[in-house]
Image 1 (cartoon, one colour):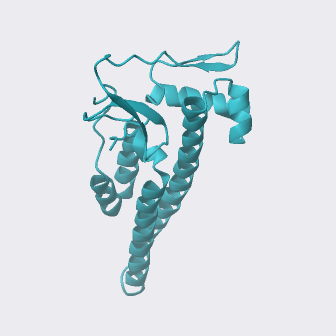
Image 2 (cartoon, one colour):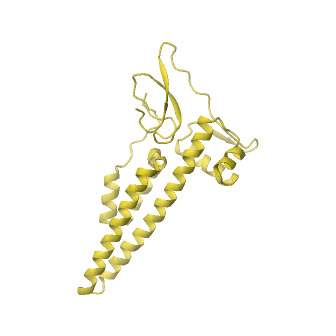
Image 3 (cartoon, helix red, strand yellow):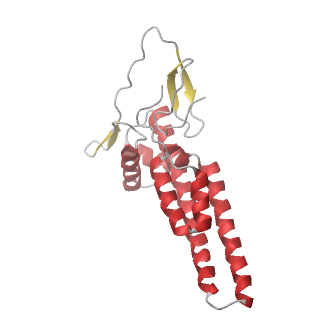
Length: 202
């Protein structure tokens, strides 16, 4: 079944158009999308391709503006600088989003698929510090990746709620989410979303 935590996200088309028209608005829409669409964060390849394409569009527009500055007034240089700054910032955002998405997928695999709950072990296997891992896990809980989970600072663990048992007559199967890799049990012949990233399951 569709998960109650799923939110309707802004379409990538609107984000891209906003960047082309006026990139500061594009950044605002991008922030809103990445905050509300968990699948956009963990699907690093398609998200990275979209952000890279926008970077090249902004740089191309900066190049066009620069050529126009040769024959026009000097004030056009401000537009050139604006597009260049936008391209640099977007490129950095794309890299940070990709890195965060890779970490999040690793956490989901360790916590959900491998039943790792000790944050120290999760940190070691993820190659980051305990503090960064604990911070990331708390951010994931706040964003709805791990619904109703908590961090136990004393035991240094992430505590997940017990999964609800499906109705006895219902036939279920386990599906691996294409976006985050979590293995989710769903009822056969029903639509369902990933419990962790919100992606529609096939």
